[in-house]
Image 1 (cartoon, rainbow, N blue to C red):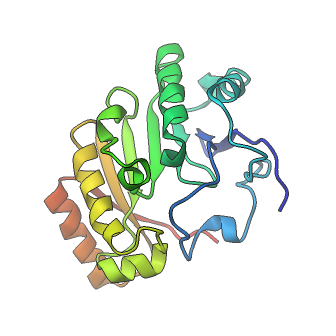
Image 2: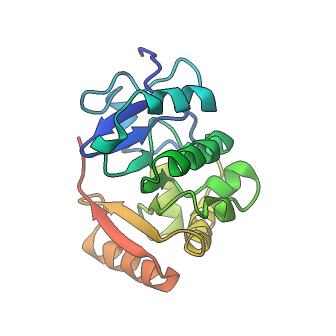
Amino acid sequence: MKKEMTIVYRYNTNLYINLTNRCSSSCVFCLRQTRDRMDDSGSLWLEHEPTFEEVKQALLNVNMDEYDEVVFCGFGEPTEAFDVLLQVADFIKEKWNKPTRLNTNGQGNLINGRDITPDLKGRIDTVSISLNNPDPVKYQEIVRSIYGVESFDAMLQFAKSAGKYVGKVILSTVDTTISHEEEEECRKICEELGVTYRIRAYEE
């Protein structure tokens, strides 16, 4: 496992920020089990967790005009490094005012021991959360969270609360990994929460 300091990387038309390799889940489909990078990025396994100053410098080294959106997503759960995430989000908004997205497992409140969703206001425009399955037990079998089955309800509460502070909340499942009946159950959950449901394409 080669370790580098790939803090930012391009994926499609967006700039991704790799803050941490820590994660409260160990999802059975996680891409980091089969690769160490995304497209032309360097290894996303970090030598150490970057400080705010290191992330700031990495951002200053790219041409932000080339990107449509800045996404907090790497080989770890971004809310594991929440303090740095907030500092970086503030810097991005102040310097470039770019749209920002948080890709998360939705366990940020459990990880930080408090409701962190109010802190997203004015910093994050879109929150994208992996729903994975409508059943709490099956969800846990898939994500293997350190918090157990209770992580399912915590994830849904995180999504509902985040909707009060950010412009858009998306809950997603991966195409071909659940049945069409389960997808309909997920759609109903999203309707009840007042959030968007998206089915993502499966990536090898």
